[in-house]
Length: 202
Image (cartoon, one colour):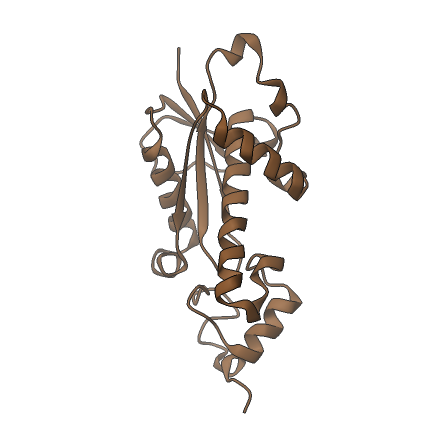
């Protein structure tokens, strides 16, 4: 029977922090028996409350029959590669770290051209596939945890609140303090076209 992995990412759009990808292989026996009842309601991480995401994350990480892996690509690498290639690198790393090599990969959204494994791209796949939904939750919660850690390191930016996205609060902090080491310098408005934004107040 084919071993299928779902893969998804979190953090393509923010101005700061890493992009995180996860890969998940659910037990093949679930095709006949159905999934663990505790995972009923698992969906695209964006459709779940933070509390529900945390519950599913704990279940997915602790379940003895689920194969999973999480990979992180930092902001400096994103700037070096570009966000698309960095996202694909994170996906490749997550798949490579799985305890078992998958025979096929389900990808949320568009195909990953650099992927050598057979793949199927599913539009809105995180709402159509349990394995992609599981990967979505693992990636999102893992990234949120990292951003809360960065918030303690760089408290002036409010990373725990906005997770690095370009909110008004975040842009105001950027104008006041300039970028920190986890900001993506290749992203607008951090690109050199607007250096005046990062002149700290006298």
